[in-house]
Image 1: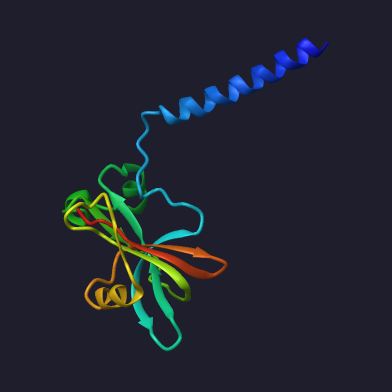
Image 2: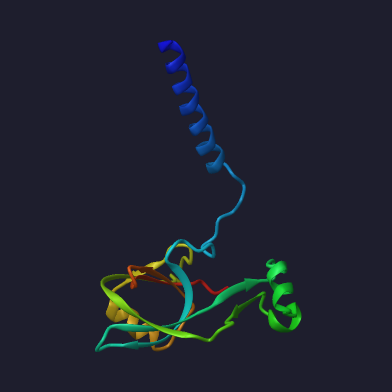
Length: 153
């Protein structure tokens, strides 16, 4: 009986390892456009220094390859996506969110776009005066904990 238990346990471990390895070897490309829990793509409309509030307007990034979504929205690829993408804003609804004291800020590194550049809050706020977005904004417990500029091709 104990041999059966050990054998069953070994099979469970082997099955789990197989699943993990198959997932790691998947040819499916994962991109930053896949939202993680608490993350949204947004334009930052304003930053209120006195209250440390960011005013955000959530958007959707749509590329030519998103044919189902383009069809659903009735977009014209030639007219609406001349650069191969569009930042679609269905609601134009702004929301104000507090910025965490220890929030993390990452900007696109012009020398190597795949490696974002970490900056402090002061540098980010200066940058924000010129570039409103888009940014990936990560929210935890109704507070913005991370802001990362989205690379624009």
